[in-house]
Image (cartoon, rainbow, N blue to C red; front, side, top):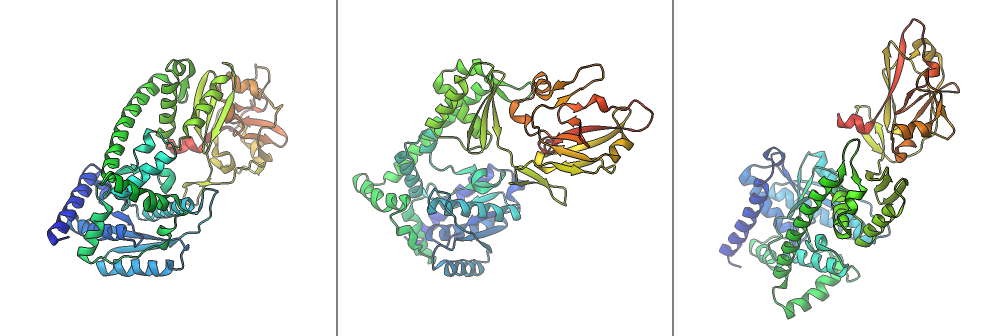
Length: 482
């Protein structure tokens, strides 16, 4: 490759990077960009290119290296990356991860932990763009692997040039950017040779037990011998698939708008949904799931979920679960509910996610606080002074206990009304069945005095003079919305 050819390659990549970032909010880019830097040929080429690009446009630039600990050479690779960045004047950071397979193989586990660690490094520095060195041959490999899995149009579209990946990166705002998708592996090799770019070689890339390596070393050479430059045509195939998928998404968005009932919470009107026919029903459901940043199930699983939801009678209460979300049928509507983690409040006041999902009874001694957090129930009790409620003096002397619903509890919401079981109250107020178990009940000594979303027990409302206290419930989801 002559110098002028290397310059042309650099110019093409610069133009692609600029085109991508020109479409983004300037205030996000000004905080800087980061590169996922393994030390291999591809990311080493992009490191040099981005260093020059960031210098030209005065952008903070970081290179992040993930130490997997899977190779005896891992320490040497990290040292190489650190010294290379020091020589180039690039800010460098590295972190180690522990790889534990979740039944999906060591390759998938390493990828999962790598991207989650990269996401954390970006979040710590408030970086909104993480760049990777995937190129045209990688795109061809991805499309081939998706075809082997029997994927649909979304999978055949391969990798996007820029996209959010909240489940992969652990961040809702961070974007993945792949500026080399239009460049071939050979063009990167030639550029590295011309510019004298040193890089490491990962021996695991030759291990044919990994599907991607087998596709790269066994299948792709055969395809190249049959149809030279096939990767470029696969790239065009991916573009066509993405265009077709955009049309399907537009149809799904229109269908979703017609079928959504938003009077209380987002829900699909079942008769309206059924009127679309099975193909559009599945297209809408998949789009709805993805629009909520949830992982869509396979086609067969999606179809089975649809059938389970619709198989029941009109007044049935049905729940179907997949990974981190549930589909609930209630009042002849379908609700899509993300599985909520338990949230705890940090000392700084931030609401943080935890994994503990227990709801053991909690004993409280109210001493006049305006509110008390209940992380197990993912919400907060508010104690509000007013003209109606429980006598303040009585409440402060009582031993309060917060419990989960056990069944058989009764509540009177007004002095002139009879007590009713909680299920009847919930049904009257149309509180969905899947929300009821997560609502706390407050007892004073052994008496039920308050139920979240329902209110105070009228048997304990004080009618004498003196300060009264109302109790109100607010979920963390409601708090975060405001």
